[in-house]
Length: 508
Image (cartoon, rainbow, N blue to C red; front, side):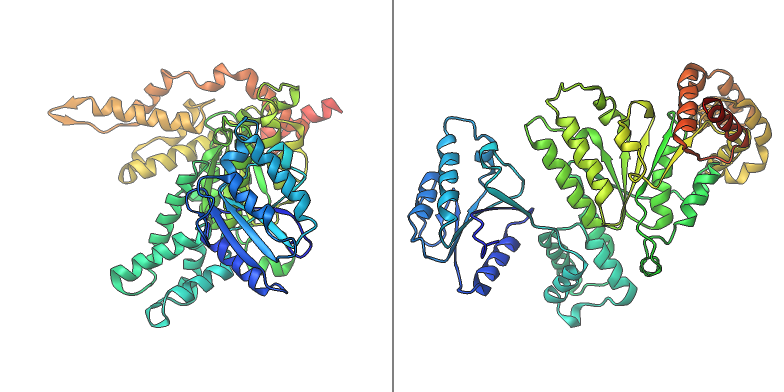
């Protein structure tokens, strides 16, 4: 781009120093070599401290530089000015940047803006070329570890070394060096025990973005009652992200959409998939994508995508996607089209991504989702999570009671509990058990608190009105949608399958 005389480049990077090292290398390797000049508003130009506190003075130096001088001028952190380009104070700066881009096309000079976030005023959209400076990949992380830690102090090899490198994915170069320095300061070596420290640093880094959450995954398929079809689908793709699968010719799985009423286990399934596949789990709260400042939402989407791809292979859980993007096809532009732009960026990435990021999206009210999200190619499969069958309800009771009272498991009548919990969701079954424990805990017999029994759980369920009884019409609508959309049932429920098949035939 520099040789082609691109006049204005915008480098987006979370860390500044590595970008400037690369720029020095580019300038040195160019033929002929180019000089590099750095400026910031506090210290001015790095070579003579001129133009402190004045952007216009900094731009004036660039304008007055000899046209045939081979030079790269780097201005740091102009994004606050670009963000408020319409203000009377900043308009002269934007105007001068436009003037410079016209002049630089005919010179040997290049102007580069660096910032941690992207802010482009409409006046400069045609002149600016954006370059994202990525977080380090596996090869660079390996190189950083080798350069920073002396061989005699690097006491980690084989699979442990590979796990350390993967743990570092998604961290900046500065954070990787910091956690390695901490290990060296503590015990004069880097070994397998430092993987946990890296993961903790990763949690801090992701938490600071304010967009994604890094969640621990402890739930295995054994913690999920029922949903046999979904379990089989997950187990079949357990090794889909391995190098062996790539050599076999299998593409990376894209993701699944889980649809069902509240409490049917959609969130638990997202955690289970990450645990079964031994992948990190990132949770995206779509509400965090939307910022109050113009352009902030789009910037957050780009940041989310960059972070997820840096952590790949990983599972990205998009929780309650219907709340963020429901009804945007209805023509409402109450947020000046921000929701549409964010949604457009998200589904384009979902369709075209090559990084092994597996998306698990959950939705309660799927009917309000845009058709573009539901079409083939966005997800590998769509699963409908219905209320559990009697057999599945028995399994759910066993899962919870095995965890709470493993020594008394035989004391509970699971057949009776399964019969009397009709129309209860998995979440409501769990709450009934918790309420039964409170009931028994509050009863003191002969100075001792008694343990809860099957009868306590039955009494709590008798006093509970399940959501299915209240939202019966919503459940029927979801069943009709599942039949119409060709969604797979997560449970091996032959009665539901026959019902959906009959609805589909009636429509035909």
